[in-house]
Amino acid sequence: MNATTATIRATEVVLPGVVEPEGLQVQVRELPAPGEGQVVLRMEATGVCFAEQQMRLGKYYDQPAFPFVPGYDLVGTVVAVGEGVDPALRHHRFAAVTKVGAWASHLVLEAADLVPVPDDVESDAAETVVVNGVTAWQMMYRTAKVKRGDTIVVLGANGGVGSTLVQLARHAGIKVIGTASPRHHDAVRELGATPVDYRDPAMYAKIRELAPEGVDAVFDHVGGAGLQESWKLLRRGGTLVNYGSAATKDEPGNAMLPVLKLYGRLLLWNFLPNGKGAGFYNFWAGKRFRTATFRARLRDDLTQVLRLVGSGVLKAQVAARIPLSEAASALTLAESRTVLGKVVIVPEP
Image 1: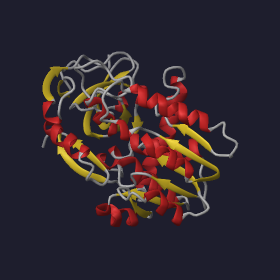
Image 2 (image 1 turned 120 degrees about the vertical axis):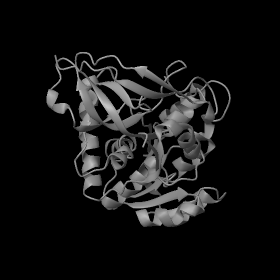
Image 3 (image 1 turned 30 degrees about the vertical axis):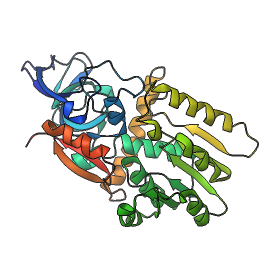
C-alpha cells in the first residue's frame, strides 16, 4: 500500500455563509487517507481570486452549499499517495485547480489533476499564474486567437488575469491598451501596456483615440452596461471575450440572472452582419463530459505558462503574502481593488 498510515491534521479556513471577510472561520480536522488514484498535497501557496469574492456573497455559479472551504487553486508538495499512484510523486511540487478547498494546510486531490511545477519557479510565483495564467493563455490563444501585430484592450490590466494577459500579449508582439486606476499606471506601463484610467467617464473615447480603426480583441471581466462599449471598440473581424460580471457582483437577487443576460447578449451579437465575434470564456468548459480532454488541455497550457515564468518572460505579480490563519485579511485586501497582481496565502511561519 502506498498510502501513509500516519494521521494528517489539516488546518482549514471555512466560509460559513454570506459573511464579511472577518466572518471566516478556522478549523482543524483529520484528513482521510488518500484513496485510489489520490494524493495528499501540503499547501505551499494558494490565493484569492474573484471567484472567492463572489462565493463570499453566495453569487458564484455552482458553488457548494455553505459551509465549505474556499480556495480556487494552489501549489503544494505531495506528502502521501493512495493505491495506484506512483510513489515517486512524493516530495515533488505540483499545481492544481480545485475550484474550492485550497485554503487549507493539506488536502486530498486526484493525482490526475496535478501539473508539475518546475524547480526554478518559486511556489508563490507559480500560484499567481495557475488559474490566472491558464485563463489568460486560453482566452488569447484558444478563444480570441490574436496574433503578432494585433492591438487588444485589457480591462483591469493591473489584476491577476489582466497583468498576465498584458505580459503574454507583449511577448507575442501584440500592442496592449490596459485600463487601471492612475495609481497603477506606471506599473501597467512597465508591463508593456498603454494605460487608461478606468474611472474616467471618457475612458472608451480615449481608447478609441489610441486605436481609431478599432482593436482586434477586448478582454472584459466587468460586464454590465460597459459591455456594449467594449463591443463598439472592435474593428471588423475583432473578438470580444467576456470572462466575468464584476459590475453586478454586489447586486441583490439571483446570482445567475446577470450572467445569463450577459451570455444571451454575447450570443446574439454573433449573428450581427458586421464580422465581429463575441464569446463568454468558461474555465470549466468540457470538464464534466470530456474530463480527460479538459485535464490534458489544462496541463499543456499551464506547463507553457510556467515555462514562461521560469524563463523570466512572465513576471509573477505577487501583491502580498499572507498566512493561512489571516485569510480574512487576504480577502479584504483583494476586495479593496488597490493591489497589483494576486494576493497569495501561504502556510503559517
